[in-house]
Every structure is written in C-alpha cells, then in structure tokens.
Image (cartoon, rainbow, N blue to C red; front, side, top):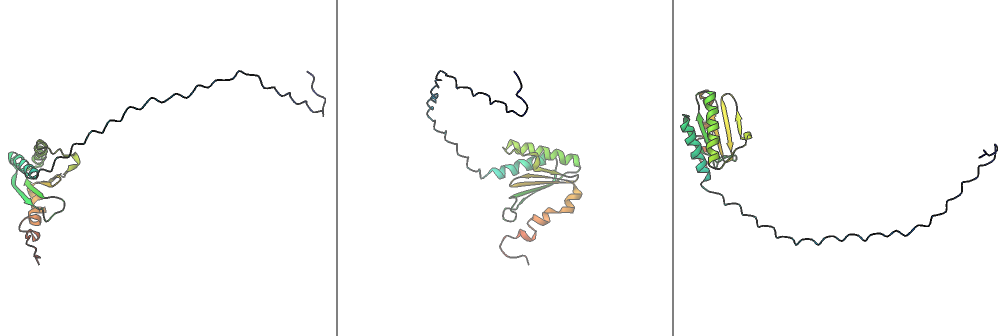
Length: 171
C-alpha cells in the first residue's frame, strides 16, 4: 500500500457488514426444586424454675469447704434487704496467702459440684484478700491483718447501723 500524499485525508475504513449467524437458542431457566416442607420448630424446653434452696445449698457447700480447709472464724451474713449486689456474704480468715488461694480453689470446686461453674473473672485477688463473686453469694477470704483492717462484719453484720431492719433510722 501506498501512503496517501501529504495533506490528503486517509480513506475511512470500510464498515464490516454484520455476519449472518445462526439463531442462538437460550435454555429455559432451570426450575427451582420444590422446597421441602418446613418442619415445625422443636418446642423449647422451659427453663427450670428457680430452686429456692439453691442459695442455701451453695452457702453450705462453701462453708463446709472452708471448714475442711481449716479457715478461721467463718461468718455468714444475710444482707438480702441491705445490699443490692448479693443476698449472702461469707467472711473467713486464712493464716497465710497460700492457704487462702487453696481455700478459694476448693470453694470453687465445691460450688461446681452444686452446679455453679464460676468464670475466672469471678475471682479477685491481692496478697491479703481473695474475693469470690458467685452471684447472690459473695465470699471474702482474708489474712488476719486484712480482716481487721476492712472489718466487713462491722459494715454488714447485725450490729451495723443497717443491721436493724425494723424500718427505723439509726440516727
């Protein structure tokens, strides 16, 4: 081919004619399989009614475990009408930190046997105190010095200002 002379326009390319093609046959959309009949959802089992004696069984299991571990001066306080965070407090003393840690582990095992499995976040520890939050039951395990320092019996015991539940103000 020769190049067009300078200044002359190049001829436009010829348009291609549409080809004659055979008709394409589209397949009919596939029919969805018939849906299986829905099964009725199984009825949910109702939650068992709360056991009114459960708290007392947990308290007794914890108290027995602490007694078996030679805890000193075990006190159970009923704070049902005075505290919003618990119904019972157990306060006990261990002579050294290792004994307190062992008592906490054994109390956890005893509560598990009664069906209460605690998360590790339910335990708070320091060198002189272990707190176990078991819902309506809170257990405090102290060294002798810490127990005197915090004196929870004075705050929550029957001789505390809130210990008189007759409805009269202590003032």
